[in-house]
Image (cartoon, rainbow over all chains, first blue to last red; front, top):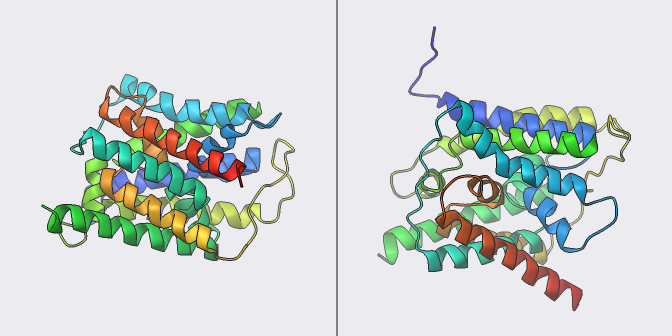
Length: 142
Length: 137
């Protein structure tokens, strides 16, 4: 029997659960928040004993796509943004997530899960500016 | 063991990003396009992750150490300050331009998409610029 519904995108919900499981693993075994920008950012100032778990987690993220392809088809990946805008976006995301102490995973997933007022504020702000950027780029500046 | 679990957690996190479709920047941009042809898929991803996360953090609150004996490093409830808001504002703009945030940026590095690498290199540079400015005080 297959479960299909137009109302609920099951792959998205399941993917969300799987992300939650990864968060749980990191929390219960490492005592750490799965905040990706923070895990990467921590490598810019090396501290003894605080390097290998970061490198291992990041390596896991990178090889996940390689392992996925051994068993399943990769979903479509469409990038229509030009290289100059991609570079600008990357700079903003890198600088902004470090200044704001988190991204979609740290503030969005982990922060909302523990009802942190800071993370709720951060998530509202980056969602709103994300909406605004897409609105400007797609509906105003075209 | 600590690194092995971290590696597994990274792989599972990546599977979630891929399986949910969030690895596709076009899907993220469609979610952020609220005045256009809005696609709510990302809301389901967030909902699923936060549901599991809520239970995990509720159970973790009682612990002082992890299963591997490490201290639980859960941030406290500090105040909302201008750094948090300005940083999130800049992040949101970048996210809205490319449809890529740090997790998918790393997952995409494991695919054959070269455009995503431009974003990743710039992101790592942006983090470096932050660090340099931070170190100079």
